[in-house]
Amino acid sequence: MSLVDVRNVTKKFGHTTALDTVSITFDNGGFFGLLGPSGSGKTTLLRTIAGFYYPESGSILIGDRNVEKVPVEKRDIGMMFQSYALFPNMSVADNVGFGLRVRKVPAAEEKRRIDEALELVQLQALADRRPSQLSGGQRQRVALARAIVTNPKVLLLDEPLSALDKALRVDMQIELKRIQREVGITTIFVTHDQEEALTLSDRIGILKAGRIIQAGTPREVYDRPVDAFAAGFLGEANWLPDRLLDGLTLPGEKQSHRFAVRPEMLAVSSAALDGRNSVRGKLVQRVFAGAMATCLIEVDGQQWKLIARDRDLPDFGGESDVWLNWKPEDTIRVPA
Amino acid sequence: MKTSLLAHAGRVWLALILIFLYAPILVMAAMSLNASPFYQLPFKFSTEWYEQMAGNEQIITAAIRSIFIACVTTVIATALGTCASVALFRYDFKGKRLLQILLFPPIAIPWLITGTAMLIFFFFIGIGRGTPAVIAGHVALALPYVIVTVTARLSSFDIALEEAARSLGADAWTVLRRVTIPWIAPGIVAGGLFAFAVSFDQFVVSYFLSEPGDSTLPVMIYTAIRKGFTPEINAISTIIITLSMGIMFLATRKARFGGEH
Image 1 (tube, rainbow over the protein chains, first blue to last red):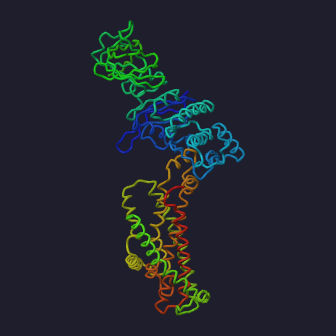
Image 2: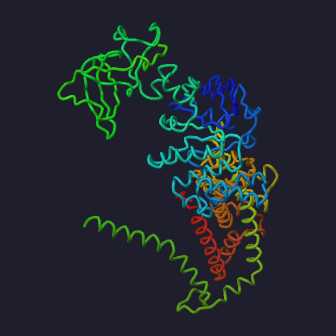
Image 3: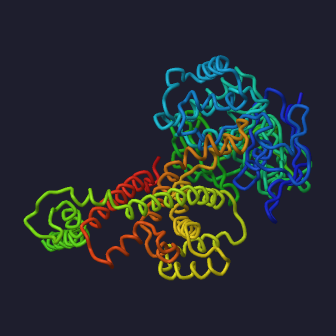
């Protein structure tokens, strides 16, 4: 069942079209990632759903209510900001309770719900602190508790983890997912980090130049990208040069199409393997990175990348002529 | 060695500046507590001049009028200046830069010229001289100080705080009252203190715009000096300086010009 339904929304800033007839639906209870390079319109889409921008045309439904002309404060959303935007003059508990006080929730219930929300993010002990006394990860939890304490219909996250360092970010990804599952709230988040999008999302939407070019589960989008941009933006792609296509088993007509292989789908060998697609290459560099290794291989003048477990790679010795092999069904086919 | 010599010279220079700045004030304060009306030494402590001053109807009336005008100026200038700062911060509109520049002449233009211009203008539109004219003039002079301090405070304000409050269901008024104003409050207080000091210390514009016999304290002091100098003037001047410097001290502490909260 769809909860948020964006239909043919166009948003312009002056002469720039930030969103170009965007249509996308967000299922109830799902965790949805909007992914795209900067300037692709992903943040504009999030802020238009939130109500900070009104679209020039198109409609937005939250539940069964048309909200495209409703201001932010009446949309019943929860939003978490990149900077967390905690009120510096209020304690943690007062920050979390802000939305409840605005809604004139009775004091006893307000206190109970603040406690519940703080328990959910495991910060009960810090209720009386000021935001300036918290670490980055703690601030993020407060921002999350504040956004969900009012039981909004939808939770919107703007680059939620970008301000954290790498180790903390991975912890918070797991934490965010746990909390979202526990509360069951429909969540839409914006990110430019493809790994974050893959880890967190049930579904992903890829944006480019104000349009949604593909939406689906992370696996669908990763395995069957609709075009070259999607293939290169989510994951990496080794593009097959046209003159090598003859003799390869391809997943469809090659007329006006391009073909690619993901780096981790490749196996390296000293001779072409049976039943596989194979191309010749020259090993340029092998980069050891602990468990995994990356090889840069020149294929018909192009630089290809291969990623494998380091122990699965042969010892190339001084040999630089290699064969790269992959299963025909792992070939990605997109319109040229 | 050369740098230490330079540093030394710098310190002497600074000391000289402070001496020339504060020695006359300290002498005046000392003389206000000296028994001799002719500045004769040795110093003999006396509060006679303060007592005389307290009994001087003219000084008291002028002081009350000055404080009243300063208070009214503070309220009006702080309210207008804060609104202007918030508007300049929040909205982009045609001619914004020009408006910002136009709000500063009271700081840049000599008071003598501002005063003359105001006098001519107020006569032209029929307000003429008197307390309303003085207040209008003072507000115009104090406004830039309020705008500068409040804007300085706002420049460190994260607009996402307002957005967060709105996303939590707060209407425009609640956002202003609960989020924006608490953040800029130190700037508003500092701006208000500046406005008070600007009005209370103002001489030129007050002199031009006040009616004879209806003058503010600085104007009254000037008139009194012309007639003949009495140590009472030292006493009232000492009080004014203490008050003004106290306010300026509070204002600069409140404004926290570094921006950190």
